[in-house]
Amino acid sequence: MTARKTIPSPEDQVLCLTMADVRKTLCRVNPRKAAGPDNIPGRVLGESAEQLADVFTDIVNISLSSAVIPTCLKTTTIIPMPKKSPVSCLYDYRPVVLTPIIMKCFERLIMMQIKDLLPSSLGPMQFAYRPNRSTDDAISTSLQHHTKKLSLLGINTSLCNWILDFLTGRPQSVRIRNSTSSTTTLNTGAPQGCVLSPLLFTLLTHDCAAMHSSNHIIKFADDTTVVGLISKNNESANREEVQRLTAWCKANNLSLNVEKMKEMVVDFRRAQSDHSSLNIDGFNVEIV
Image (cartoon, one colour):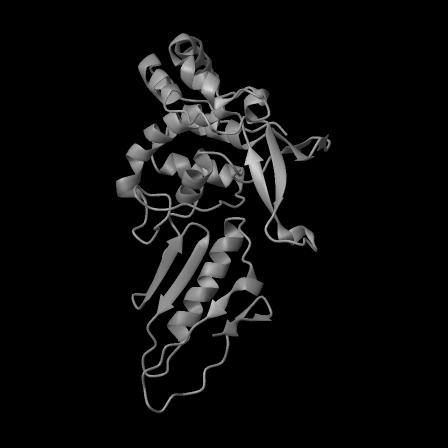
């Protein structure tokens, strides 16, 4: 798949990173970090930061100006690690994702530039991927829809094109001990193990907000909670909010894991009324 990029206008300013920033990022590489598919250890990058900064600055700036990332920097190796013992099925494994460390450095530098947009753009109910908050995995997105949202947030066309290239044409293989699977090229989703993925997921979901004044949608990465105040036994606003959230997910190419959904009803009245469970796509949500 070839990503469909937008031709930048003459006024579009291409992001350009400085050698000082690249050198500083290389110096901060964790020497114990596991090497990616390129087998270049973090220790080598850190200890050779002074010698490598010049050439890596050229590489990343050429990549930004052309909106093309070398395929070798997008290559991913997945190592399945058991969550428990003994393992009885595929779901008992957790994927450990290895990507080139130098690409993580590039992503970190570009993320710093994008983050300048966030304080005024992100919804106040997103509590992950922010300064001094924790992170979680990101899930798949529609590429064109995603880049359109980035553009609406003020990210210029050249950088949107670079991000589109970042999300497509990603070779991935699975390694178990000394055996490696054949390579599959991924063209959708926010890739695991990448520095930029959590931030991109946050930007994708920033417009997921409650419509009714009595409701709130609280987001922590890909975990979402709809909080609603039910007055006089009228649940219509809360039910409609859940249906709007379901429709928003479908419109944004996101899948709800209905089997993991739970509904909690807090009722302090002495005479509590019956409460029917939510039904989403024919599935009754468990009340806890």
